[in-house]
Image (cartoon, one colour):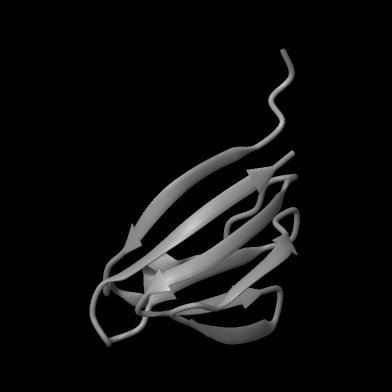
Amino acid sequence: MERKLSAHDAAFYLVARAAGQPRQHGDVQFICLLKGSLALRIKADGRVLESGDSMHFDSGVPYGYRSLPKGRCAALVVTIP
């Protein structure tokens, strides 16, 4: 059976900037922030997601995210091939 999507909960902790290094894979990613603040960079565009915010993006382009210094951050992440 072909995989349709992958969903998981994710916890982000405040870490060094290097941990937010860009990654990429050939899927679409949906993220819904459940708690905290998350800095997200897609290509050269940066934005901050706050609790309750959600967005989707093409993860085939370089992207990265990291928790902001407001404590622990939690999200629901769905990856769609």
